[in-house]
Length: 274
Image 1 (tube, rainbow, N blue to C red):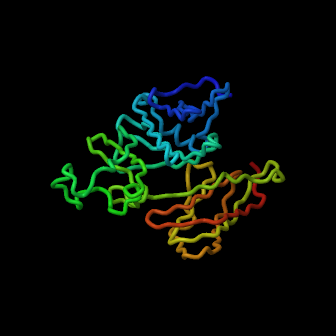
Image 2: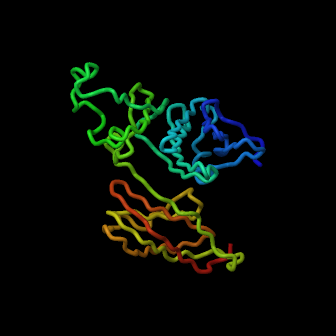
Image 3: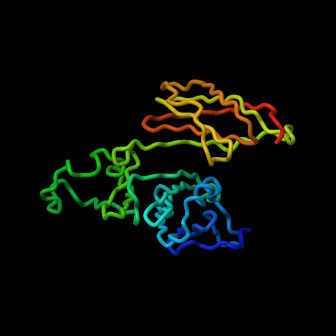
């Protein structure tokens, strides 16, 4: 049971109907109507706590997309900057959501979910004089053709943007995406010694990928391989790291090209005393 915590702002809550989620000073929590308050943001807790400026907490805003089961938590870092924590969830397993941290080229102060007017046609009088070249989405936009609600974002300088899930750039800058493993921990048999992490094996496909490791549970990352060329066929790769610590996390990252991972295995041997 979590005690001595409170919601940072009246705008920092999501009502799912069968449960409530809210942002606290230390974590993001789930309240399911019982006496238990469950922290669900452990995966991003360190970054969340480092980001949150409690003096600006009233500027927090949250957007829920119930169709895609996604929640966007916009957390203020300063009076003019925010970081977005993206949460994907399963209604049968709310306590274990999926997290990603998003950085945008613009700073957003307001946001919401809207559905486009499906009655509009190319020759509707409301669209008289508007040329297709001025529209912000393509003809084949997935949200345009599937009538999925749009995430609309309002920036501090008064501009309004629509977030398109198929975009690969943000204001012309390639969107960097990454996938993190758990923090691998040395075996109990190592007793009071640290582990010497020797090698990472992974089966990958795609175009290219950067491989990074963290030996301080995600605070800092070390690049051990840049722009590893991949192919369209899943292929095993080995990456050597040779670092000593109790834990190691692996990050696969790309800035302008895609990758897929099928499995990963790490190797460690007994190292120096703690």
